[in-house]
Length: 304
Image 1: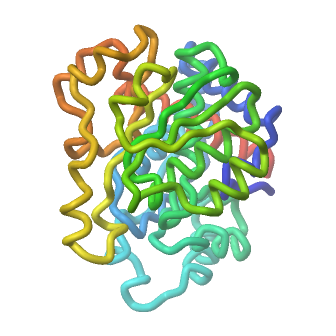
Image 2: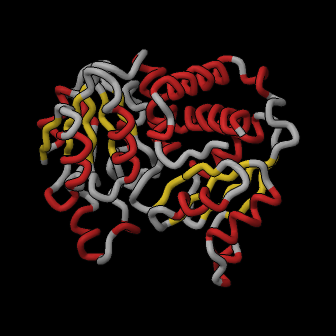
Image 3: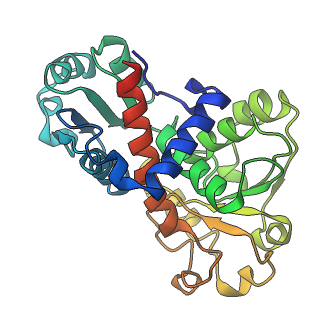
């Protein structure tokens, strides 16, 4: 039995197989319409979610499976004090596979250690968000034709952004990848990512404050939201939330084939005027999220 806690749980070969399966599911969804018939997915979401939870549910339903679970901590026995360990033991009696999101780092790992079914980390605090990373990789791979030899700009909340941390971990395994880290001083990438991931693996990167200075050199611009829920005081959040806003004017200096990604939800860090630009692919990205989760669910069930 296998679980997915981090993108690094998959070898590059396994990851490439997963991307190939997702692409095949996109091309011919009818081939997989009954692949999970009789199987149940439990979605245990202790934090609010739109895309991640619904895309997991859509993925399972697309393959003929069924879904059960809860959409908030208050809707589960966690409100009565039940531990994650006890919850997953119970869920293992009802479902064949589980996707869990929790505000505490490491909660998904705790669940996997006590689970009788495969567990997928659907986001644990500011730590990891592996299925968002898989979505990002599928989007880039499908639209750029590969994951090598790319200059990737990561912009916004690089300190608390779990999507950014997971994406860096995944992409450093591909040759020719470099990063431009665009953030205010207060939201710079954590030291452990800078030192233990980028520098230790000799991955080229630069840190910048101005988005305008970074855009012309990028193949991918990955925008992120400044997350209110990760701040300890409202004053800091208000000061930071409008630091970067991507506009049509700023985009004018970008390469014609640059892609703009965003894990969503968007607040105001990308102006709506950018949505019609062919380089803006964040809604396509949300669609790719269904296919990669279909591929992941089917693969983990077959590995069980």
